[in-house]
Structure formats: structure tokens, C-alpha cells
Image 1 (cartoon, rainbow, N blue to C red):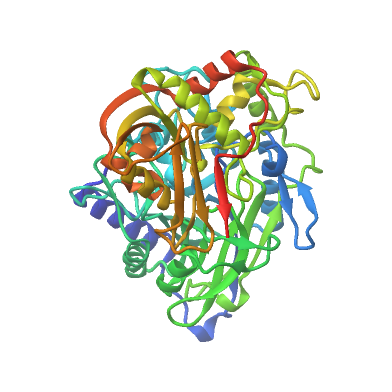
Image 2 (tube, rainbow, N blue to C red):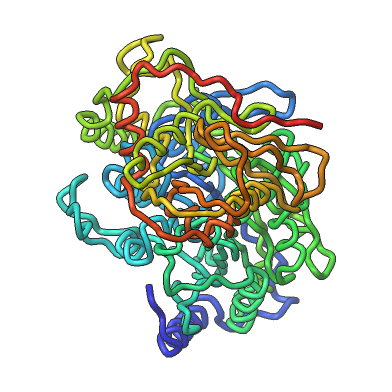
Length: 565
């Protein structure tokens, strides 16, 4: 939703008038009435990624504080838990911290995630922040998801019409490159007669995790600056109860209600965000934690995240003083609720999921190949993974006409495992279906072949290690190298070979990557120095063709990356 300054001022004026009329009649004096409070429950989830069916494997389990696990997630179970939580507190709001869509299983993604938005509408979601995956198909598609209408290319395939999200998608730090706001920065919702300001802020470094084409013309500002600016507007409007939906997170350990975070981006933002903000729901890192972090005035407030894929609901119970209309911080209680599968599935949600699955089945269940054992996305000691090996080999083969000598892919683009025993065709049969392949590679990234020098290639591999973490690229069988775990950043990689021949820093090599990496995604800026770009197929099509040519595929030996002390 594009907003001019005039439109934004009009929006603020409407909110102010509504607040004045609805909630700010002249109060009685303190001596005339008790200092009572209104209870309001906030129920929030994050990083659903269109997981309407119960997610499988480790993606469908929650690890508790004692190390045991419980199966969790699934839209029908999520709806039941939300309704149970709502029934316990008269005044409740359901919210989302972003990445509702994108990187979704085939039952949602085949229909451009319209089934997921329909589910969120039925669930009664009141507001969401945009995550990075809301931009996977670009700003225009985000507007269509918000406001409705059939897809410009595929039309309306899920249902006869698509009416859009009935909740605003917020982004206080998202602007056009001319400085005008691209999304609503906040919304105000009333619960128990109390106005609650909801601020949305997405990650400032979103351009590093989304293809450049998808966000062309957009800018993403500092989260703290945007939160504080927007909080100031709410303060001037008299909205004292404020919360932030933040699509940024920390890494963590422990159970759902532990606070063993690494002090990462969410913690730093929480420390700087306005003291007027009473709670922060975080996201993006797919972690679980429940923390109390002091605001700039020294007062603690909850900073909480609930894993991903609908496995946890982050619940914050507020008491709002009826006189001041502000949150009584000392009375705030937060917890993460496990979305267990031992409850009765919500009938309406279950029917919607069944509709989506049934309509997707003819394509999703089509066999594309077979495997002889599990292909795992997670890497071993060196970071090399069996599934990463296969995907890189598939991309190399698919771009051979471009003269490709090497293929390199990013681990974040590999979203699930291929499990030998998981096929719909039966237990332990090794069949791989289109739906499973789509779940593994859902982004429709386009393969591109570029020319890099040997020096560029070395620099790319060195960029796997940064001060903020490590991201091991997955590589084709033609590329081998060694890295030292103890060597300083920038000097870890040695013994690079291509087809068994040592790499010459001055020589040139044809390297195939997806368009995300070619644009410098995930911080691999050295790829942007590539020349002589030649286009290739969509990454999913490359993988499907590889299965068709080589099935059954056995897990490759992990011998491409060698790690030494």
C-alpha cells in the first residue's frame, strides 16, 4: 500500500479522531473511581511460511526445556489452540510477526499462498508485520496479497476469487527510494475498550536475503529509528499501550520459555526501542525464547519468539490501567504455548487445509524420481550436506550449455530434507514427488552462469565466515577446498581445485549460481563482480530434471570440503 505524506497525515488524523470519540471522554477524578485495569491477551505466531499441514520431521517438533520433544504445528491444531487461549481472556488480539507466506509447502505455494491468507483471515488475525518472504514475488504481489485480486499470470486457481488479507501488513521502516512510505507503519486496535498501538518493523538488512529484483525501488531503514519515530506518533495521539511486531530475531538455546539468547539483533533493537513500547514479538531466526529485556528507561518488558511453522504461540497478557490507558508493566505475563496435536482439530481450518491439499494433489503427488537413502539439508562437521551436494550437481548439469564448470548454492535456499520413508506412496519406498521437491526448493530462483577469476572464487569462499556467523555454501562435485577452523576470518580457505586442478587466481572460471547469490545475497558480495552472465532454468526445474536423469540417487560422500584445525 503506497502512502503519500498527505495520505499518511490523513490516516493519523482519522486515528486521532477515532480515539478522541471512542476512548477519551473526560475521565472522572481519581477520587471518584477505583484504579482498575483491563486484561488484554496478545496471541502471536511467526514464520508460518504457509505450513497448513502439520510440518514433518524436526520441523514439526518442539524441544522442551528438559530436552524431550513434542509433535507440534498444523493449521487445524493452531486454530484450536488460538480459540482456547481466546476463551480464557475476554479481550484478545491475534497477531503475526511476519513470514506468513513464502518458502511454503506446495499445498499453499501452488496457489500463491492464497489458502494461507484465507486461513489467517478465518483465524481472526488483526495485524502482521511484513517479513522478508512477503517480498519473494515483489512489491506488486505483496499488494495483491494485501488487497486481493487474481494473480496476473496464473489467475485465481484456489478459489473463484481472492479478496485479500483482512488485516494490515505493517512496515514502519519500509519506504520507496524517494523516501515516501511504502507500507502502513502502525495500526491501532481496540480491545476491552483500550487502544493498543501496533508497530511493525522488518529487518533492515532485508536486501541481503531477498533477490534485488523483488525489492527494486524500496529501501529498508534502521529498525530502532523507525520504531521510535512511530512510537512518538502514537504517544502524541494518546495511545499509551504499544507493542512491536519485529521481523528480526536472535539465536537461542533451551526450551520455549527459556532466555538463552546470543544477544543478537532482536536484543539490540529491544534495548534501543522506545520506552513507550510495552512488548516486542520477534521472528525471522526461527528460534524459541521468552526474555525480559530492559527498555532505555531501565524497565523490563517481554521480548519473545515462537519458533516457526505454527509450532508455538507467543502469548503476552497485559493489564492496562483504565485511567492512564498504559500497560502496568509489573503485571505483564508472557509464555510460549506449544501447539500440540492432542487437541481436536478445528473443523473449519481442517476443511480449508483439506481443500488446498486436494486441489494440489494431482501435481504434488507426481513422482519425479527416487532416492536410496535420506538426503539431509543440514551439513556435517565441514558444513557440506548430502542434499546440498545433489542440488549443486543438478544446477551444474542444468547450466552445462553455458559452459559452467562449477555450481554453488546457498544453504538458506534448501528448505527441507528428502526422507526415504516419507513419500505418500508408502513407507520406505524412496519415491520423490514433485510436492517434496517443491518443499525443498520453493523460491523459483533463476540459475545464472557468470565468469569469476580464481581470486574472486577464493574471496567468495572466504565470505562464508563473518563476525556475525558462518554460512557454508553447497558446491558441485567439480569444486574442492580445505578450510582451517582456527584461522582468522579472511584467511581460512586453501587448496582450491576445479576438476582436480589447482585454481589459478588470474584464470577465469564459469560459475553457476541462482539469481539471489548473483545479486550478492546472504552477504556474498563477491558474486556481483561476475561478468558475462548467461541465464538458465529455475532451480526447481534443474532439480527435477536431475532426478529424472539419475534416479535412484544415493547420498553422495561428503568429500568436497575438508576441515582442519
